[in-house]
Length: 324
Length: 222
Image (cartoon, rainbow over all chains, first blue to last red; front, side):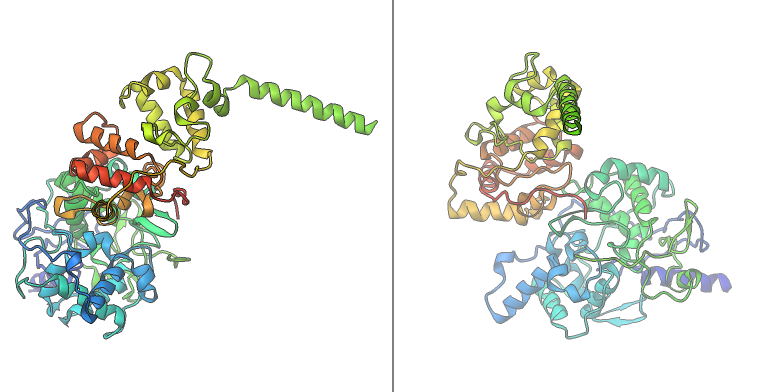
């Protein structure tokens, strides 16, 4: 009985930490909190589709945004989406933009496109244990992925982003899980993800753009290559901090323009490496790292509260001096 | 007396400093006169100010990242990058001279292009702007600026500036990547990109970046 309870709690925790834009459920193999290696989710139905496979849905072209009051709201949403540090600065606490994880301004299949997310809400999310509207879902992006503050419901930033996502989803079936939604789910890797192997993948395939220290590169105050960890990256509450989500994103989309060239094993390893670095504290911090892990991170896909390379993860980073 | 001693001291120092400088190759001298061992002056093709000869397809070198320039020279020398003119030049330079020349050109101020970029019609401008700022993700093509930075100013050590570069040079490189003649790009990023462009794309994007202002110099870290 106790086992069953524990297992269902784990499954809940994993669902609650589902990545940006997806609510796919998966069962997990239980692993003790604090373990140093990730026992991988035995995902019930690994995504067999290669990410390069054409998704069925094609969003309307940007040129089709109408010149109407609604269209102007859509256009504003697009601007926020690609440059939230400028157009939604009050709610942004790092140097990322929505587009870093939702490629092509939220249009690209297998990069958590908005046309896959918008028609999937309202939806129950274990992350906060209630039915979320799309607007509330976007609030979560600001709070966790952007390490900022949630815009209040009805805020012009949310209205614009919701308008953009709605416009892009024209013709998409409501409530259906479209191919290309979210990130691909990779099959469990042959070898458990490994920090040292991941570091090698990082050095050979990622450091060119993201820097040897993972802090990305900026030009004239604009982020060109996003920081992958550290004070200017997403915080411990973001979906991308989960190794499976990061692995799916990386496999399908990295290196930029050469998606689907890393092996699954390399994608898992480098995702583990990235997610085994320190980043801003989870804003839901529950007083201690173990308590926070127990409450929000009790999943084999989260390295929060575990020890990797002799370092306890989940300590957070000092507040960033400046964001943009 | 003390003034005289000071003068003697200063003169002596100047001699020593001059002699020391004379024993090492100097970037400006090699650029102007060649290296004295058969390598022609760089300025013959790349111009005295490093601005190149855009119409002839000789690229601007001034202000490009030293790391990038050195890699190109080393690749010409090893044959990893092929070019009938540059391979003998780069192999004729010692590794130390290649490093000196890369450093020299990276520090030259970026000259304002004097010859006009190729003219573009409205359709070409729209096409180029889309490729530069949006890409064509339906074909898996990232926007140029996603690596080369806003306005093509260049990013860090590995992504050279495109703004103000010779249109002929840019087009030649894209065609070379496309047909496999050039393949010294890290992670095959440019081969992948060029393979998704057609001739009209290449013509438009090359002219577009040649006409971009060169005000900003590529910078790397936050």
